[in-house]
Image 1 (cartoon, rainbow, N blue to C red):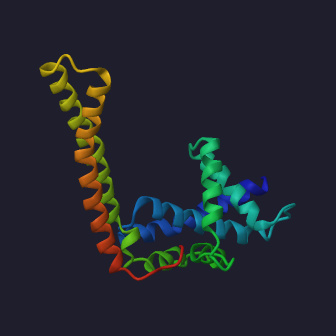
Image 2: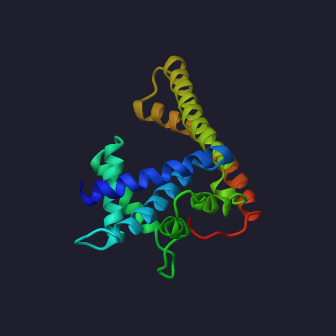
Length: 207
């Protein structure tokens, strides 16, 4: 078995014990935050495991390589996995150069302990990573695209039917303006709501 396979196998085994506990807790986090935290935790787990192997590279770097292999094996395209790993590398360090909480928790994890849960528990009151705010954003995004597209279509249809002499540029301009009348107010309302929520939240470090 290769060192990459050894690390990914160990990481999946440790994560499997955490997933059951996470399901019982019923955390409501934004999907991206939950995924990022889990991936960083896995890096920490595989980093520690790699230190017991005969590696030719740094164990921390090897852990990121192992995660990339795991993502590809789970169906992610290689280029997407490379971008994901680059993003996670950037998120794995604090401003002072230290490791983030999720990395540290994974590195210090022991079989059967709730290490990943302790990381998620730190963010229970953090509005910026909540599932509710994510759903609001997702609905707002759909409203902007669908509503804006529908408004543009109706405006273009109206101009084409009732003002047939209008030029292509004029018709396009009307469509853009109509879409903007839906998209801009929706965006501003969402932004105001977001700022209001953020003011109530205490600042947190990266996971």
